[in-house]
Length: 112
Image (cartoon, rainbow, N blue to C red; front, side, top):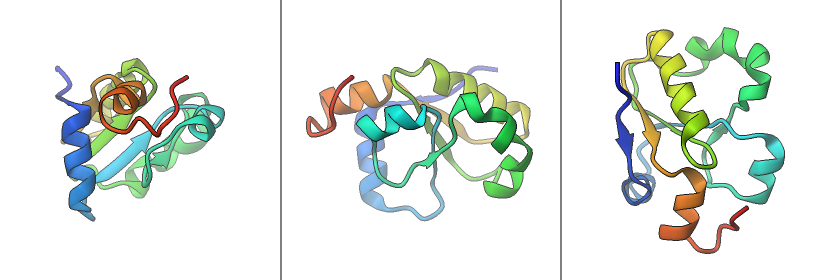
């Protein structure tokens, strides 16, 4: 099953809408998030999978739209695939990750 993607421009528009039903997940490591981040994302580092994975279905609504970000888009793609395997029906990978967001949307976010 293929994973839908959204552009960083679309992400910026969605964030501006302040949709309370939109679920935002950042799978980068804490030190990466400390360097560069977008507000309102829940941080779920892939390296800490064992800690947060048992409660994912109670922490998030499997039917709600869920957008996943990482540095360039590879780890977030893995997370989207895993979420789908857990019954999440509306997950989208943020194409290009935070690096593209910094380049194309918000140059105030540092690149690393």
